[in-house]
Image (cartoon, rainbow, N blue to C red):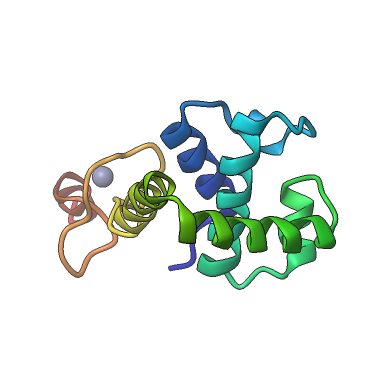
Length: 125
Ligand SMILES: [Zn+2]
């Protein structure tokens, strides 16, 4: 399953303690720039979206996204704290794959099923 860029933005925002709209905002405020670039990098690595498609979801053009992805890689090489935060986001995105497919349900899906135990029972009625 390919994650939604919107979920990547939300999880990065949560990890950095900022709002999702700060990730998308045009502000070049440093506490927003690093998570914004990490979110661009994760979007590039975890989805099949092109730089321009990612750009649309960050309200930026493709060259800005290319720069952001490159800068994120540089930061990740140099900064262990950022690497740890990016890993936390990756783990949460990974966990989403196993979430119950019923909208609004936060339970874990049963092994080999798309839904949780509660919703599996509901299916058989
Ligand atoms: Zn469920």
